[in-house]
Length: 260
Image 1 (spheres, rainbow, N blue to C red):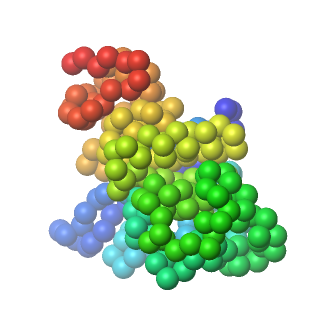
Image 2 (image 1 turned 135 degrees about the horizontal axis):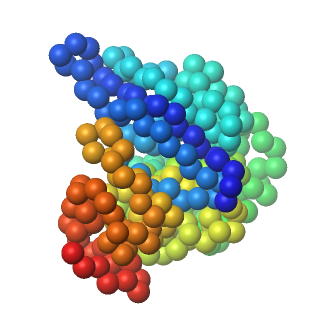
């Protein structure tokens, strides 16, 4: 992995004015390689990297630059190609799927929005990629389990054949018994398609299962970027990173013994 897929330069974000100003990101520089799974601990990242948002919210001041595959993301001017390149999987499969639309219609919607014509073939391929039968396209979300709904959400993200998946706590709303299935699915999809992941999660076990590198933020600043192995081996440097590691209940990557 040598090509840079996501580059963040001196990103600073604040809300409010004067004494009520809240700084949520402070001068961050970051690069994510093509094919990498990168795990920032903190939720503001996905909102800023994902380009399918409107202009900055009222009272928001944003400085710095974000580039995707060498092309700078500009909130006021986004092409279909930019929007198609990265897709998002939301945390709640019960709220992210329209309850009155069939699975087929849910999957067709992004294809219609982007003017893509080979729709039936893409719907069938997307369902196959997430190991769901094609007959599921005629069902409604309430007829599916939580794990099946999240598979549909992943299929919807894949249907435009993106290069980047932005994952916002993709298993936090699922039963523990289903989480491993979804994590293994995401891992397999990344390996097969060469996807780049940005995974936000507060569960260190989830981050360590998928991510090559883990970025830790505190008070809007990036305090440490650690490799997965360094996190497992307790070779992290910053006190806050050690606190997160030691305080994460159930953080036990397979084959690893975590000691303080």
